[in-house]
Amino acid sequence: FMKQFPADVPQQEKEAAWNKHLSQKVQGFKNHAQKAAEQAGIVQQKDGTSYANKEAFASQLSQQLQNNPNINAMGVSSVSGIQKAVNGVKTHSLANG
Image 1 (cartoon, rainbow, N blue to C red):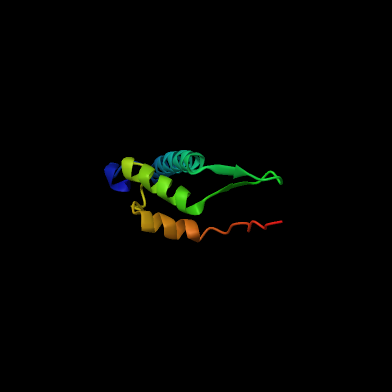
Image 2 (cartoon, rainbow, N blue to C red):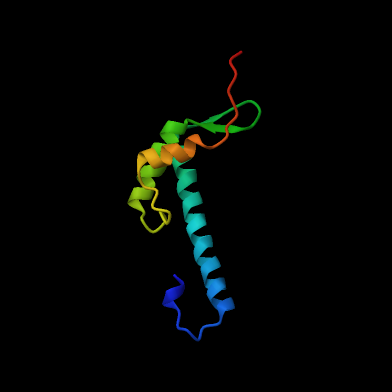
């Protein structure tokens, strides 16, 4: 990314452009994650916390990232890669009763 700037561009300007670029990527990823969660089927619990099925969420997010390579900056495009990342997320356990 930084190589696209001429050598005479100040470092501070390069860093500002990089931070803006990252912010756009993060916002795009958040938008896709939100959409994937909605498509996976959010379950609203009594305590006000929202839960989603991890496997369905991983599948939906993977599909969206594969369709939007500009957002997929990390190259995580396989269902197994997304599933591994999603499984690493700490979640609340749902108790029966």
